[in-house]
Length: 238
Image (cartoon, rainbow, N blue to C red; front, side, top):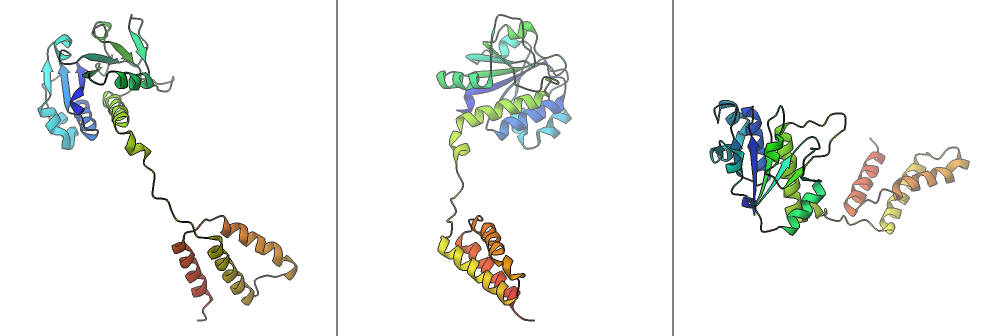
């Protein structure tokens, strides 16, 4: 499944960005990375340092001198752009992407990202099927290259592993009201022994406040025992 998805970086300028991209890809189970005309000798030291445990992705990365050849192994290309382009291509959202993945399960998808300074050119985008813009604040739309790759990796991973995100934590077994009442009665008895309820005419309202506090806690049996032990320990004479 992971081999159905690949990432194409066109004219990347910083080795550390490629390293960070490789790390994000490996975080989410992807390994296919193509690079077109990097602006430095690839890979360089910064690429290796920032890739951390994902240098195996870097070692398998293919370098091309043309975008057209870098995308040949894919069936469908999605270009990433920080701005809407005046070009005859369909602009899609993240939700649209998920629908496309669902309908085109057997295709190989390539996600294409442009240089850090300028993004993809219209010529680059012309060979893609869709343009995807990651939603951001209108005040600052430009995303770091590796951050963009991370978001796309995460969205694909989430789509493919929905059961992980739907898992619910183990249900706690809430104590019965009978056990909670025993705890409250135990506390009230201890407080009466300490002459806590003064003045006496306010005892009823003070007990109501205690009830409101403890009954809304929804403790389990273990927590009931812990609270009862704490109360008993505090009541012991020195």
